[in-house]
Length: 250
Ligand SMILES: Nc1ncnc2c1ncn2[C@@H]1O[C@H](COP(=O)(O)OP(=O)(O)OP(=O)(O)O)[C@@H](O)[C@H]1O
Image (cartoon, rainbow, N blue to C red; front, side, top):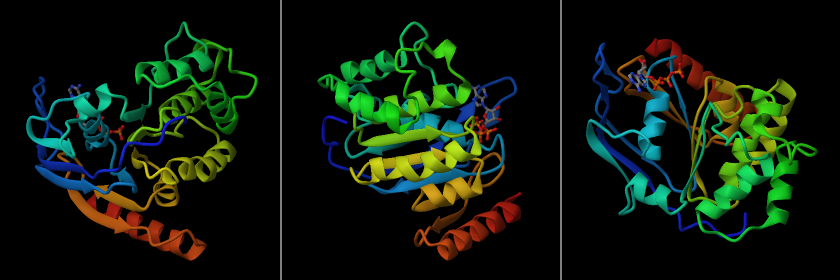
């Protein structure tokens, strides 16, 4: 958490499509225009297999669109990722198995050419509830602990854009609730743009400013819901709108 984030810019998807050539050939999306606003947290929800993770990977620069483009200002995702501007925590956590938790997090700083900041690393390790496991290797952690280490790794560089795929999928309910309330302010306060994929309607609404509901594959946007606030009534009304639209799209 050493550096200030790069100035926030919208993430703009224009005419995006993705077809996996197969066999079988799979159209993951209908042509999609979508702008993720700088500094906002947006959740993507939709039925299993509709293309949420594919969209996240296109925005990460890990997949190449069949048509269309993703741009962040004048930069492609690959440009931004190359200079450490994208933090990712994907389902498989992808920590380096031979490195400890601390050293995996430190590596993210090194790769984005930022100074090592052991106090910031320790603070994040505490925040994600991994005190006592800083020197443990990933194999000695549970799936949920690995996910939390990946989230700490993704936040340590203060990237302009963070991408979270089922960030709390393997985490128990209590930890999920704690992380859900303690982590988002960390990126919100820095003006970070965040995009997350989740199957949990409650998680989508409580973590985000906006929820995009996608149809079954090939995914198209069926609803774009603004979460108006964090009061119980506002959260419930957001959850109601998301679940109504999910049912209607099914
Ligand atoms: N590398 C790939 N090669 C071929 N097909 C793929 C590939 N990645 C994803 N797909 C297909 O694209 C479709 C969308 O997959 P994706 O993982 O994006 O869905 P999702 O909405 O994230 O699903 P879930 O909610 O189950 O994680 C699926 O039919 C999947 O089989």
